[in-house]
Structure formats: C-alpha cells, structure tokens
Length: 433
Image 1 (cartoon, helix red, strand yellow):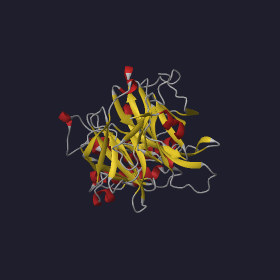
Image 2 (image 1 turned 45 degrees about the horizontal axis):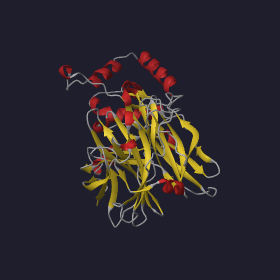
Image 3 (image 1 turned 90 degrees about the vertical axis):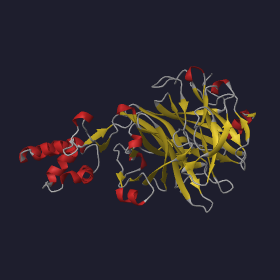
Image 4 (image 1 turned 180 degrees about the horizontal axis):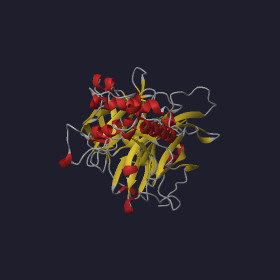
C-alpha cells in the first residue's frame, strides 16, 4: 500500500498525547480477598489515621496539598467536599471537622494523566452553534480516546472549525481538566447507568469522561458521535462506545444535548456484547438504523424502534478486497449526501494493517450497497506507521462540509491528525458493488 490516496489532502496539524494534562478522580483502595474486613474497610482505616493526626500536622498537610494542586486544578476545595459526600456513610456517628474531611478526601483521590500514553481514534460532529461564521466555514466538536496509566481509556474533547479558505483551526486548549459530577439522584430516577454533569467549565476541552462504572474499569473506548435529528426536528447527540472491564466488552451509549450533561445507558440485543455500533443520524421510514460488526468480521445493518436495543440485522458488507481480507468495520456513523449514505470503513489486511475505505448506500434503502472503494483512501504510510500499535490508521467518524469530507483520524494508536477529501472525487474512485 502506498499509504496515501491522490484524492485526499492531509493537514499538518497533529494532536499528540500530553502527560501534563491531569484530572482528579476517586481512588478506592481495597483489600485482597483473604484479608478483607467488610466491617472495617481499608478506606475507613485510612481515615482513622487522618483523624489521629495532631492539629498542627493536619494543618501542615492541608497546606502542602493546596500548594500542590491549586496551580493545576480549579476549585480544589469543591473537589474535596464532593469526594467526602461520596464516602460520608463511613463516618456516621463520628465527629469530623472540616479540615479532617478535606484531608480524608485527599487520601481517597488520585491525580490521573488521562492522555499520557496516547490520544487517538477521533470522532467529529457539527457544533451546536454555527452562528457568526464566514461562508463555507463550520464549527465542530471532536471526541478523542485518551489513554493513561494502566492502559485505561477516557474520552476527551476539542472544538474548532474548518473552512475551505483556512483549513482546520483548533480552539485554544484549556490546560486544566475537570472531572464530571455524578448526579446520583438523576441516576436513580431514570433508566440510566449514570448521569454526569460537567458544570463550571471554561470550555469543552477541559471535560474528561473517565471510567466510573464496573463495566468500564479498563476503559471507555472509541466513542462514535452522531448528531441525531428526530422526525419532529428535535436534535440530540448520541455517542456509542465500547465499555471494557478487563475481561469483557459491551456496548454503551452516551446521550447529550449540550455537552454539559451526559447520560450513560447500556445497549441491549445482539450487539450488546460487541464493538463498533454506529447509529444513522436520522430515522428512515420511521425506524432507527445502525451499523455494527458483532461477528468481528463483517459490517452489519441493524434496524430498531429503540436506539438502546439492536437485534434485527443482517450482513451488509463482507471482506472483498485484499486490504480488508481479515475484517471490515465502520469508521463512525453514515454521512448523508445527495447520492446516498456515505460510509467510511476500516479494513484489516496483511500484517494486521488497518486502512480506511468507503462505500455508498442507497439513501432510502440502506440495505442496498451501491458502490465501494477497491483501494483504501488512507493507509499507513512510511512516515507515520510507527507507534503503540504499528500500521494502523483509524477514525470514529467525520462530517460533510458542502462537498468536502472532513475527517479526523488516529495513527498507530498514538496520535491524531486530519484530512479532507473531495466528495465528488471519492465517489468517482468507487467501483460498483
């Protein structure tokens, strides 16, 4: 493979992992099974050591803590107070001062560099605010997979704009990252796994969604965003992702309207224990449609009357060309153009090379494959094939701006970059299916 199609234009912008970006998240030390004492858990034992400190020592430790964290994180007292609320049941019947509460919380938190090892597999959707822009310019929201200690994956965000005249421009990155608040009351009252609120931010790039559920202990992987417009014009953003607990994967879904409040839900049905679900951006004939690869080899077309349950489906695309002999999958949600549904695909070939291709589905009947690329449009190149997982280019979704495909993609499971592709040239490069 040459690694570079003649129809694409690559951006010089590269987003690399940054170990200086950290978030404060809960730390919950436990005991090995033979040594566990449920009536006297390890967190309580740690707290008792804090409660035994002399007042001067307690004051000195708090000063050290604030000096260490205040320059890198906003509202440290608020973070400590919220953590104490989460663990306060341990201390019923005990008198605990404000300073003791703060220091106990500090011992049950950790600073986590959420993108220290990698920043890749991006997904892009139109921003909710497109006002005040020059002609042929569009704002976007982009989610990326950040990997930190223990190879745990989190979701981080960027915003920016793309124009025909200026190409890609990213908004300034906020150096201070903010952990979301888990709204336990909202979670109990809805059919949600969790409701996350990201209040008091300076911008979307300081939001980090890190694993909080047992199903996610090893990561939230490869978020596929889609701006979904319902039949009545109501707009929501869905994001399907792989939840990984170290042994099993399952599909989960984030829903948001404003990127301030996120609701996490489980996806059920035959795709529930697989990867790669991508929802179409609108209903077709009253039904929800999605792409999946629950057999790990082929792209499936799914239909449903509920975006949280997918069991009715069939194989849509199977490996045909040499660069996709091992497996096929989608690179995010289908993109609607005049000619039909443009679907970006990933194919796996020799030496586990991942490359990006495309196909075109009928606009009214997505079960009809009209055309597909016989050669990849983006493949690993000699200049950027090296990284944590070599020989991989991968995307979780792009967007259409006029007649241009705007595509962020990851390289070698290490960093992210951008490309643009002329839609007419891409369609002309396809073969009849």
